[in-house]
Structure formats: C-alpha cells, structure tokens
Image (cartoon, rainbow over all chains, first blue to last red; front, side, top):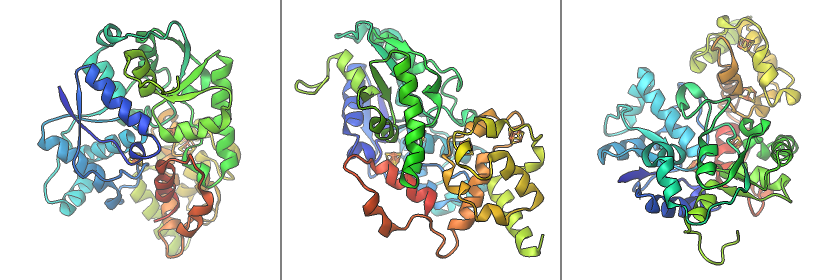
Length: 262
Length: 130
Ligand code: SF4
Ligand code: SF4
Ligand code: SF4
Ligand code: SF4
C-alpha cells in the first residue's frame, strides 16, 4: 500500500532518525511512504484564529496533493500532524475560511483527504498483530514510558486519535514490540513547547515534571514523536534516554543500522 | 469601554470564534493550565475580562506569551468555551501591530544551541511574531 507522506522541516534536519526509521519500518510493514513533492513547512503550530489564512496554505497544498493521488496523508512529527489535521478540519467545517483559502490556491480543496499520524497508520492500516509478527528483536520486557505531550491528542474534538485522558495507542505498540509500557501521570501534559524560546526556565520546569514522573514509574527509556518534546525532555534527562518512537520500532523490527547506538 | 476598545474586543471575539458568555466561571480551565503559575491573568480571567471589555490589561500582559497552546483548557472545559483561542486572538492583536513582534529575527541567533530543532524556531516565530 502507498500513502502520501509529509515529513516536515525538522525531519530533514535535526530529527532525521524520526524520518529514516519511519520509512524503513513502514516498508517492513508493507507500506510505502511517498513523499509529497515540493512540500512546504507547516509552521509548527496551528493558529486558531479564523482570519489567519496564509499560514495555513502549506498544509492545504499538502492535503490537496494527497487528494490528487487518492491517498491518505501521513506524517510522523506530532506538530505537523496537528497542524495539518486542524487545517483539514477547518476546511471541512468553516466555510468562510475555506472560501478564503480557495481564493489563494488554484484548485478548490474540499477537506476530503484522510489524515493519519504514523501511530494511527500502525494501528489502523497495519494492525498490532502484523507488527507483532514482524518483530525480530523483542524488547524483552523493557519498561518504556510513552510521552504523548499535547499535540497528538488535543484538541480531541479534531484530533480523534485516542482517549485524550487515557490514551493507549503508543502503549499498545510498546506491548506489540515486547516491552512493558509505564503509565505515568505526566504522559499527556505539555513539555513546555516553544515557550523554551521565550522563557527557558519555565519550559525547564514543565519538562522536568515529565521526566521525573516517567522515572518514578521505573522507565528505562522515554519515547516521543515530537522533535520539540525530545529537545525539551533531553535537557532534563541526563540519565534516561529520550528516543523517537520510530527508533524503538526500528530496533524491534531489526532495521536499525549497525553502529547505531542502542 | 470606549469605541476603540469595544472594536478591539469585538474583533477578538470574532477572530477567536469563542463565545465568552457560555462560561460558567467554574475555573476548571485555570486549574488544568500548565502555565497557571506563570500567568498574571489565568485562562478563566481571560474569558471574563474579554466579556467585560476589560481588554487593555490583557494587551499589556506577559501572560500572552506564557500560553503553551497545549489545549488542555480547550479539552477540559465543561462548557466548550475554548479559552486558548481567546488567548491566541488577544496575542495576535498585539503582535500584528507594527513593531508588535515579541520575537525579533535579530534576537534568534543568541537563542540557538546545537540541538535546537527547526520546529522550535518556526513555532516561536508563529507565536511571537507576524
Ligand atoms: S511541525 Fe515541524 S517539522 Fe513539521 S514542518 Fe512543521 S515545523 Fe517543520
Ligand atoms: S508536549 Fe511540548 S513540544 Fe510536545 S507537543 Fe506539547 S508543546 Fe509540543
Ligand atoms: S473551564 Fe470553561 S466554563 Fe469553566 S471557567 Fe474555564 S472557560 Fe469558563
Ligand atoms: S492552551 Fe494556554 S491557557 Fe490553555 S491550558 Fe494550555 S497553556 Fe493554559
């Protein structure tokens, strides 16, 4: 099966492991991620104001590109996914906004593309049984803390990924890989996000809460799908590795390259 | 409220899409807000102050830049008020003004370190500059 893929700017730079292993693991699981041509950065955050149009055009173009290929649109970065999904929702539900957008673009986009986060692709298009079947290096009971942060789950009325207060999608994947998920209170609370650029001390406190909470649960690693989460958490986690979920998947599926640190 | 402030208030309500009158003042948004400690005006106060037209203090407040856009207040409000959208609309009102950028591009090099992801920069520019 082929899907349209929006990697995003960070996955081409600081978060290459998120991109490379997303592609390799998808191949193992029978899905080809076809990168959209000439995509543009989504901007990292969705501006909720209805009169903000220009900043949402890159997402609309990506959605339209997937529509033309009659494919679903997949992204791995939590932020890209959030921006694209919220934009798609606005195209479906806010006709005034949609009219304005369509006056900028050459073609009318109607909001009909289906948007998947990579995790949803694993759950809904691959399935846990298939993942289990493809595991060659099981995690052998390693305790892993899934960090959702905020962008994957909220706003729930739009994102509709999972129960926003008690999500299980990443935990189910950890189990399929032979690990033991750690359920800890801060897994869906914000890491401090972009405020690290304005008030690093404030962000530091938010990330510290998350890391301490995960460690208290006995985790040996924390996994995330968001480069900014990783950056913020890494700074507070000298003694516990924070890795991308695609890296964990790649280890278990046996496609992590030799020489890559475990 | 003078006409100018009234216009500003109406514009904030319009672009946010929020109806502050739906708020029942339960305070749950503020209780769940991870930026609560750092805000001089808390999410429930944003809602009440916009409704009352008490806009000027909000326009001048540092609280605008502490909001993480984490949408906790949006998801956990029992009345569907979506306070984060009001915070965003007030912030946009400030930064869209000439000279209103919070983050200046010249300031960015000093904020960088080796590991910072591109996402941090583009997100901060979206939130703190026009
Ligand atoms: S969220 Fe990030 S990585 Fe994704 S395109 Fe947007 S800014 Fe770049
Ligand atoms: S947890 Fe942090 S970086 Fe991650 S999604 Fe929230 S703000 Fe973004
Ligand atoms: S949670 Fe909703 S109803 Fe309660 S104070 Fe906040 S905005 Fe008002
Ligand atoms: S979106 Fe902003 S105001 Fe709402 S809970 Fe998060 S930080 Fe607080």
